[in-house]
Image 1 (cartoon, rainbow, N blue to C red):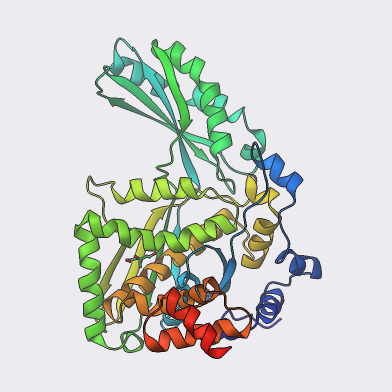
Image 2 (cartoon, helix red, strand yellow):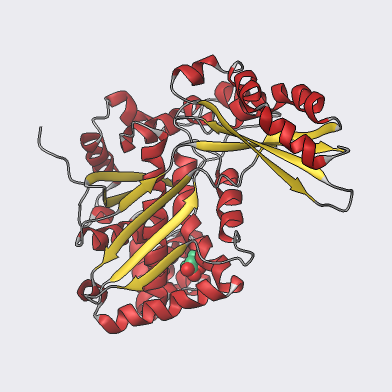
Length: 419
Ligand code: MEV
């Protein structure tokens, strides 16, 4: 079978139906799958997902195209309320293709569970005793999840930290668990709860917290791409880009905005696949501050050819089995569109998308500014708010953009003029 390409130009110009046809062809979707795009989450499913359900809340799913990651073509479903994000990711992916696309490196899916031990008399000898019983502790943890162990995962290591605090010294034991294709919170929390009595017996004192850490710094994904200097508009633009990036690398005020741009891409895919975007956000921002100062999650430099090299590194606690991603029909559909076989593969796409999104934002900021790109869709929203419908929407939006003033009052006037 011929290799499928995710490269499409003018995808945004296609009617919705043709976009659905394209993705259905790309991902071998069935007619049933296709219907899902315009369906709603049924109320009984919603009622089982959270408490006190009243209804459901819809957001658009867009498709980012052009992604080449580790030599494989991907189209990426993105769920977001923000205009320009999907187009920006697709454009950045198109530029990255010229020099071979994105390359990723992904660690094993190791999550950390924490057990907090308080009121231990001799923390140093208690810590040693815990480590001396590592095997027994790991065996007990693994007895909680035979299925995970059968799949090659399970508890792999115990680490012990002694921390000073305003309420005295405490021992924090880290249980390191390979969670395979799951996000892992349930498996890790169950294991931590099971270990608590044994730790209390070994160390004396008592356990307070037993819970997963969202700073998943043993579950790291990296992505890299080279952006062609000529496509960017020449070496001067590459230099301007690096000047912009430098501020994010040294200043938390800029780094927060820079990383927000990264999360525009990442969250949209995390939501599309039914994963926990708060976990990813918490992990990413904690990781960005791991050296004591909050900084950029991406790094950029110019290579010897004058091209721009971009890299991203972040924790990525996501799963493709279990959780809402298994229950929500559209999350299952989005995973099918991605054609992913493992959580690791999904992490590589997450990181590549984050890097693409960041490149696109900083590129726009270093050249034309961000508003130009936002204008078209913003104008369409204003046109709709002013009461335009059908073909009127594009006419009103085009006129607003032409006049350079995207204002509700003016949109209303234009509607009257073209009536
Ligand atoms: C807006 O949602 C995201 C940006 O502010 C990111 C950035 O400044 O790098 C454009």
